[in-house]
Length: 98
Image 1 (tube, rainbow, N blue to C red):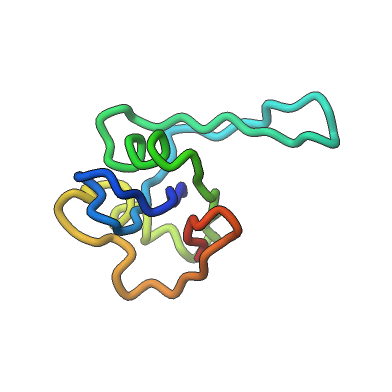
Image 2: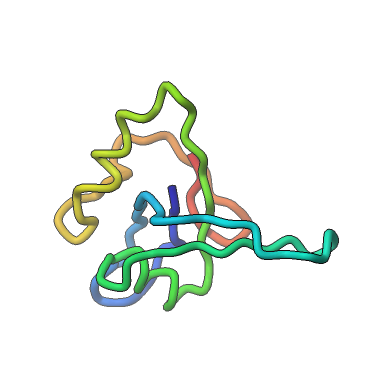
């Protein structure tokens, strides 16, 4: 699950968002510089928020949290606040983590 940093762009309206990533993969061959590749749909609100803020957080669901896939992956953050009521903290980048 990807949580982008809150963004000032008009679509984000200063809020946070979350989406289920299409794919995540290791992308580093240098142990001291860990990197990942994250695939997001270009039409999703999270994609534009990541581009404008330059930050995101990766959160991995536990097996007993698979019920969140529908809530976070099938509803648009343009239509509702998908993190409303979800306990979260902000990381160093400002991206929320659950």
